[in-house]
Image 1 (cartoon, rainbow, N blue to C red):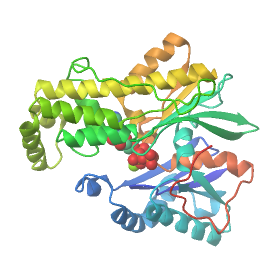
Image 2 (spheres, protein in one colour; image 1 turned 90 degrees about the vertical axis):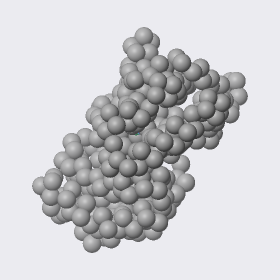
Image 3 (cartoon, rainbow, N blue to C red; image 1 turned 30 degrees about the vertical axis):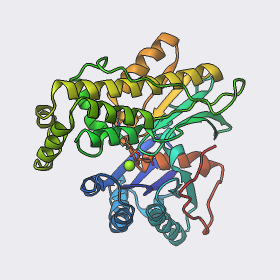
Image 4 (cartoon, rainbow, N blue to C red; image 1 turned 60 degrees about the horizontal axis):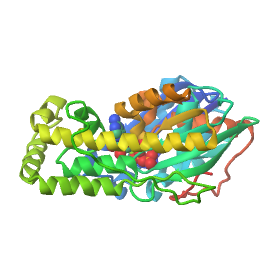
Length: 366
Ligand code: ATP
Ligand code: MG
Ligand code: FE
């Protein structure tokens, strides 16, 4: 089964060719990160325009790199949501026209299911006790129970953020500290240079369910406010403005450049923020795994690239005899290989989309 995956839900235009849900023949991503960085975040109108510009060359490159022709494909898979409406529509319109023209089946994939399959595609077979998936990215912090039967996957949402996503908190805190966009990778790298126990940030456990039927939820807007308050009460504002201005003058700042602009207090604050966020993500995920008796944990989405998160999960999972799996580096952030992988069970089950497929910006999983 040779599937062409197409992804355009946010700020990357991506196409990939994947064989039988696991063998990545090509994985092409045109990122708009640099353009959006000028504005400190994704600008929807610009994103759609860039997707339009990139979609044809990206698909062409994915086929060329995989060394397959369009006629060899067995299906075209595309992200149907969640995401930005105008951005999703570019991928969907292209995929529909392409599938129609080639007389190949069209498969709609939920972006979040794609993130989960970024891990599953490299880690075949669910563990006996069931699987708990943490999808943690710029737009989502969601926990799902995932079950496979007859090669079909079913998901149940058992927790989510009630306000900001974890990646969003990383990006907002980085911004308020005068660091570049996206902030997650910067905070990740800078944290190694600070004392993670310097500032005690606290999280409370959130449960929108009941005691018998709990949900394992997150909230990340509080810590952003706490960081802001710390900055105000410790007179760090002038240094932050100076850092922001200095970084704006450097074309592609290196870690060394940024470190030179951060004092010890700032590095301690950054390390403490990351320590608290990682601790909270791991704590809630383990609590959910224990409650539902899951023995395998899958962590995916952009924040899954975080080194402290990976290290902490590996540590506690080993202690508790749980397996924990992360996507490879190129599959953590948005890509189309994960979309093609998630489409493979649907191809085998004949779960196809019709010509009426539309973008669903708020599409839910499970
Ligand atoms: P979604 O997948 O929810 O629609 P998205 O497209 O913004 O949203 P991704 O592209 O999967 O999400 O991930 C981007 C996010 O991941 C950003 O918020 C970024 O700061 C964060 N991120 C990337 N690398 C790291 C890292 N090493 N540590 C922490 N956060 C990171
Ligand atoms: Mg993205
Ligand atoms: Fe994503």
